[in-house]
Length: 149
View 1 (tube, one colour):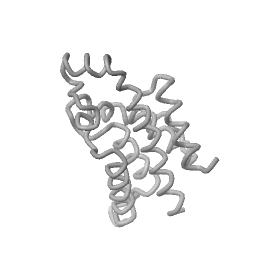
View 2 (cartoon, helix red, strand yellow):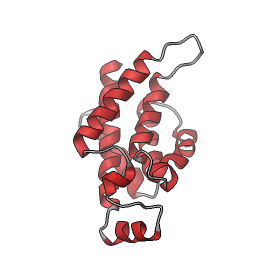
View 3 (cartoon, one colour):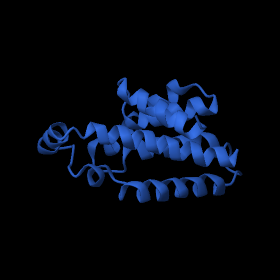
């Protein structure tokens, strides 16, 4: 199994086992990088559910951005941001091309920060969509990172 698919599936398994979207994706990418995923996953919690149910960017996408930054981010103020920004822009472009949006409420068709939106989310089993976003965000990110390696 190619690495991107392997770590995409790992993110999906994390999600199915109770981690949230951003936590699952950044955890899988941390594992891909050989980095302890506990702290990365913990840092991702507020990004889950469209930045804590505020209709922000998809948590899976946010987790993937965090994973790319973990791999390519600056270590000092004199380091360049070019590789990180280019990889992140490619990630966002591919994710948006795949799903038609990048914000949680647009992807789900409801605002999960409201009772009505959460009821819609549950009644339409939209968690399955989130599982797919989680898998694909990790897949795309690992694919980008593996070609930069």
